[in-house]
Length: 459
Image (cartoon, rainbow, N blue to C red; front, side, top):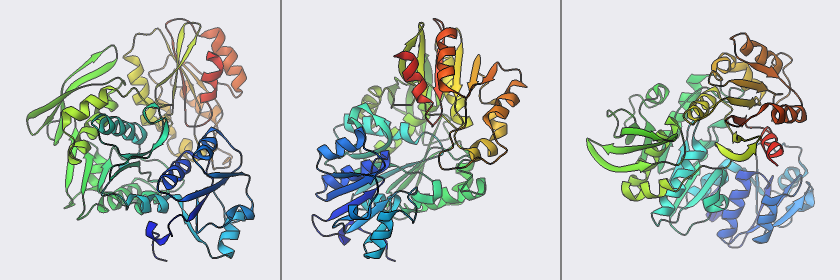
C-alpha cells in the first residue's frame, strides 16, 4: 500500500489515536489539532496528558471500544496496540486507513521545508531539547516533538509557526526509517533494543539506512569519534558534517573548563572560533550534545553565537539529572539512564559536584536489555558509593526465567561494590530516609517507575 501522506485526508477530517495518552502519541495529536484536524483518542485511563488534549478540543475515551472510532478517516496506533484491540478490528472492518505512529510522524515531517530527526542510542531527548532552546532563543519558532517534558515548551510538544520540524527519531523496530528528515543527526550507536535487533551489525545497518533518507535533500550530522557511526557511514557519499572533541571534526570544542560541575568551552570550525558556550547541565556528554546542536543550527541558518545564547538557558528536561528535592539534607536527583553507557555518563557527571557519597537506586529496564548487556552493567556503577538494585521493570516483556535483578546485584557485589537488592519501593524509601545524610547525592535511576521513589522521599 502507498505510504500515507497528509494530503490523503480531507480538510477537517477526524483522526483517531489508539493509545493517545502516551507521550509521543499525545504530541502527534497536538500537532494534528494545530493543523485543523478533528482529533479523537482512547487509552486505558485519562491523565494530565489527555486532559490537556481535551482542553484543546480533542474527544478522549477512557477504555477501548469499537464505537470510539466514530467518523474517523484515519486511525493511528502505537506499536503496543495488538490486532485484537476492538478499535483496530473496527477500523479494519470498515476499511478505514490504519497506520502506526511512526508512519504518521513521517507524514507530518514531509509537510515541512526542514525536518530534523535526532537519532542515536543515547542523548536524543536532551539534544532535541537543546535544539528547542537554541532555535526558540534565536527567534525561530519550530514545531518540536520530544520524548520527555521540557519546561520551555510546557510539555513534550511545541506547535510552531515556522516551516521547521524537530523530532526525536527512535531506531527501535526501525521506526525512524519511516521518517523524512532533511537533517539526520546521529549522536552515537551502541548495542540496545536487542529484543528486536540481532546485534550491532544490524543496528549499524539501520542507522546507515536512516542517514540515506537525506540523500539529495539534506545533510547528516554525526559524532565523528564514534567507531560504530564511522562504520555505518563508511564509504558513504552523503553530505556529512561531523562534530566531536578532536579538531579532526568539522565542529569541535576547545578550552573546556568546569565551573561547579558545569562545562564551558569554545566552539570551533575549521580552525576558527565560532562562539563560546556555557552550559547549565553537567557532563562531558552534554558538551557533545551542545556541539551537535550548534552544527544543526548553522545548517538551518542560525549563527552559532545566537544558538549559544539559547543553550545557556537550557537546564535539562524532566527525568534527566532532575533535582527532586532533599532528604535529610541530601540532594535527590532522578535520571532516565537505563543503558550502561548512560549510567556511567550520569554518574561521572555527578562526581564533578561536591559530595560525600553517591547513593544510586537503580531499576533495570526489561529482561532482554539486562541479559544482553549483563557484563556492561557489572562495571556501570563503579562511581557509586552505595548501590541499591530493585526489581526489573518488564515493560513489554515476560520474565525469561533466568535473568533477575537479585543475580545482577550479587554479580556486582562480587566486584567489591557496596550493593544490595531490595524489591519493595516502600522498603527502599524507609532505608534512604534513615541512611541518607547531608552531603550525599541520592539518585533514582532507570526508565521504569523507580522515579516514584524520589517523589515519595522528598515530600
